[in-house]
Image (cartoon, rainbow, N blue to C red; front, side, top):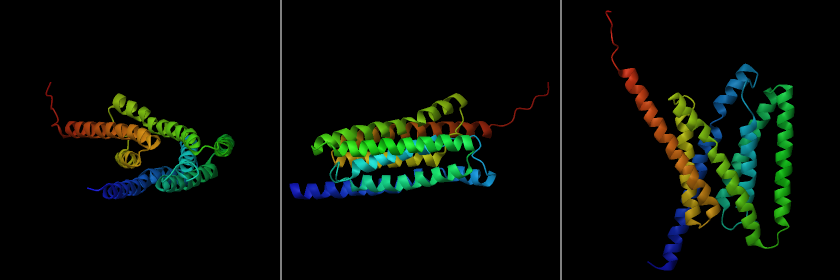
Length: 235
């Protein structure tokens, strides 16, 4: 096989993985909809927190910036998925603010302004770095750290599932979407030889596998227990 053919196959595989990652990401972006249906129905945010949407927005902003040609080469599909993600998170934050109590609303607005301010500093600061490789490394490390922190957040849910022996708090389709999206961008990063993409998504893939294993283990265990015949005591 010629070098040109190998390069072409690698590019096609990379683009296919990136497109798949964009598609699977929709599963994650749409996952809060049931929560907001409940919020809208009850007219209150109840005990729900707006922090996950703030953190997700920050993550999308940093990764979106990393994917632009001003920072890294040939990462358009990273920009597209995070642009869509930023739109979804912005809508969720607006909806949360609409139904939140005054105290929650003020706190969330303060955090939103802080996120916008931090991202503006990152954006302007990185543009002051004249060397494109140094700029890529600077934004890349930030995006990598941001992604790892996002993927690490399910560790609390994993711990809860093990403690309660219940999959109630770990929706199957959310775990599946996390695994599929992470795996797609792991492959995308490998084909593009970009450690800032494949390292955090590799961690996300491992955590996704752990979640799926736990889901099937406790789901089958629950099915077996519910299927056991009732013991009748005549004592």
